Length: 102
Image (tube, rainbow, N blue to C red; front, top):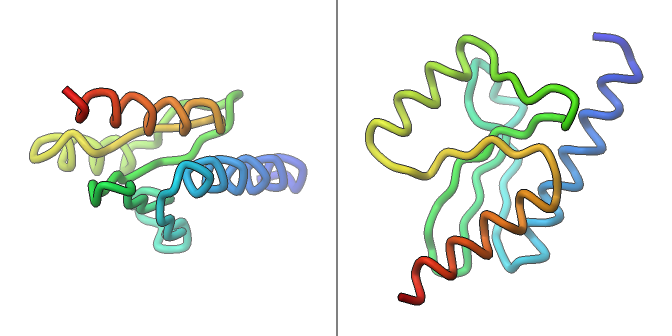
């Protein structure tokens, strides 16, 4: 991967993680695990766990192994998200809280 693409991906990764933290979440970076495992494990303030795959806005496509992991996770829970922007991260938390306030 060209250096400039890796830098953009890394900056975006940090921005998305910071957006979850700003919403009061605990965030663990699991990107180094590789093999299709989601990039972030996010624990929302209410204890709900989200598995988050971070992409860049230019490349929202998940790889083959990532798609397989997503399929397996979604088979048992709806806690897998693909996120490309801090705004999407904030929307996930906002929508989650709205859904749980009912």
